Length: 365
Image 1: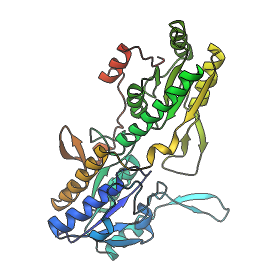
Image 2: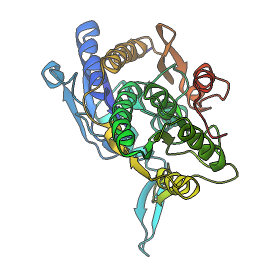
Image 3: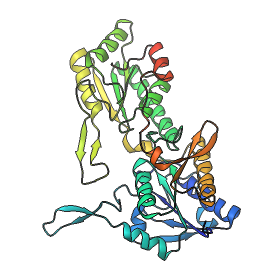
Image 4: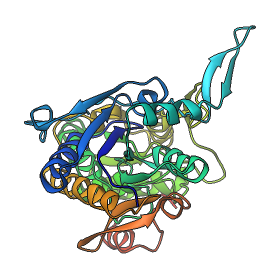
């Protein structure tokens, strides 16, 4: 195997708390443990396409552990295999510019690339590895917690904490005004944030993509609470939840070959339906990108730091085309192709779903 002298690191896809902790761990462990230089690739794969790379030293990563966001910047649109451009008619088309990625890597003499991101980022990394033999090692990141190859992704715990605290705040105002409060959380097509924050925040109804809901079941739960003297209710809904026989609510469509659909608005739909059926005043809140921001939780800082160190270790051991992940108490590697093959979804018969059901929580199904 070729001796590793220089490692590049990029953060791709949506940002989330803990990215800087990974960068810090990669740079620090590479320099201290292996005497290997590190280079930051700016704005995800855009940096590889447009030759935007800078050397990182210990001073560059000093003090960034508790910071949200990423010092390298990120992008979820710059897929080198489907790069957007305007044709002569002003229409958006896509072309393969992966050869520019290779030139950037060769120009900067990078011996390996650590890609920090979710399923989109890792799928691109795997394609670069399989088609161009680029040595990559993946680090799983997403607040959605929907990536395979790991028990949990960093960013999830922080998003969960923010969502739970928000539910707590909405609980008191719902009770004071005798209202139904509908809280919409992120997660795309996975219900992890809604399920966990709903249970932690005492949600009376939890709606997740994995369990299509019926409005009459939701109304039944709210009326049952009202009959017991509970004049308010909390409904926690994942942005990708949908009614039985229906489809997801789409906020808008964009020119993005990776994910052209932006979800959003399911809380308004549910809230209006609930008020019409029950006659109880209902308000909705969309938490949105506040779940991605701010300082990472201690759990995410620790997990991200472990991932960063083990990613460097995997590079030095030549485990290219693999992604690090948490399995039980240990960090292990999994082929990226396997990690991205099947998204992680909530199982209807999972222990937490059963627990919530036993406590009286309705999933509307």
